[in-house]
Amino acid sequence: MTDQLMEGNMHSRWDTEAVFELQMRLAGVGDGEPVEMGIDDAALLLDGMAFTEVMSVDFTFFQMVQWTSDFITGELRSHWTEDEWLAYVGR
Image (cartoon, rainbow, N blue to C red; front, side):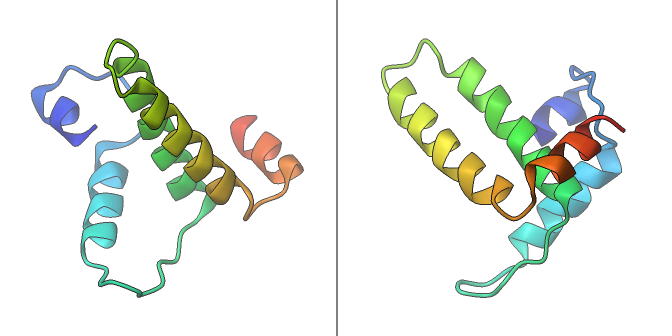
């Protein structure tokens, strides 16, 4: 997603600063270290994965992308209730 932001090709609901801030936080984490994330961080990652999934539809490895996306989505969403997700999306 950041390459598209840099090229100016992306119209997004995400603030460029938020994208880079999350990327820097995640890049600075060592193996096995915990990462504190808010629902907004999780939503940003889920949007990025959805974009990757759509752009991978014609590739031979699309099913693996889909499986990975579904797994990570389930893991991220499990930290908040369905009501919290609905409230976040509805804001």
